[in-house]
Image (cartoon, rainbow, N blue to C red):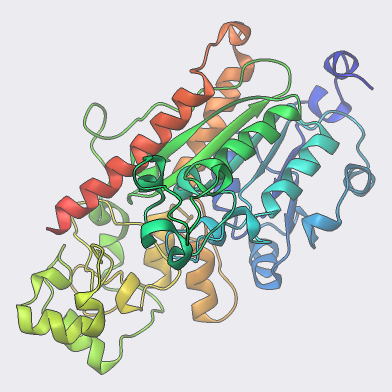
Length: 425
């Protein structure tokens, strides 16, 4: 069936107000809860991790859930499973992002986990939804398609940005210059090429969840695709300097301070340093001798190390919620108590409802929360798609060209990094 035939076919589910919304890599359903709040409730979820699946079943027992590997799925199998042969309105997913994370080995698309993006694209090409959402870590914008270890690069620089300069990326006889697919941004260029090759129009960029009412700063890469016409623009900020004030940690968790629920604990050795870090501070707030004792060899390493021995501030959004709040290097210490934020507090900062249940061991619960998309960001994305789909002027929407969108995404990422360093100084 061609696209023109699909356009004229309204499936039975949508004719009575329901749409098929298929979620992939669903995790603990942060993105899905946001879409649900925007009237795009998922009708199908696909998740491979058994613990995450137990969480989904505990909270949405009526949701059609496939516990399995997306690489084993096809459109035919999904449609047969759903007993549905009409148009899928939206496919949404955030393929696992460790290979692009600043905390990982940065293996990019040479990492099998990075290739899950292509499994997602394969399903999009097969299902042909009206819209798709691809969500990922913001560092995707600067990742390389092919990773070369730092020790094997000319000059051994860790930052790929330096290799866009001809004077740095030179063949010296022993070490060859980095090739095009090893340079910063080459992974995203390939993803863009493959997304457009599917016949979809795309818009993309880096957004901050705090700009949409989440009580945390969390940068994410978001790509929106549309089969028939220009896609929705990324949602405009609703909070920040030119809009409503940012939502703070106080707004999110102050009411839990007396009954925070289950939480991890610091070891005695780590706890003694946290006890001396003031609200909103980190390791730099300690006297120099304690800084050296707290960080050990890491004290002499490069980088801002802003996540080390970090205590939240009541009056600001939290930094990015991680899945390891009890580690000294990715710490999320309570603003007052000398302990990591609790499971309930982390979930509240991520936007999960108060009654949302997380199953599994405590460390698994923290990980489920830390891996989620903030619900408020999911809602903003869903609302942008709904508004766009209802607009009679959607065919007239004009987006910047790909190079401009890439430049703006990288600028947003690097501006955030500069701000983080400035705050830590």
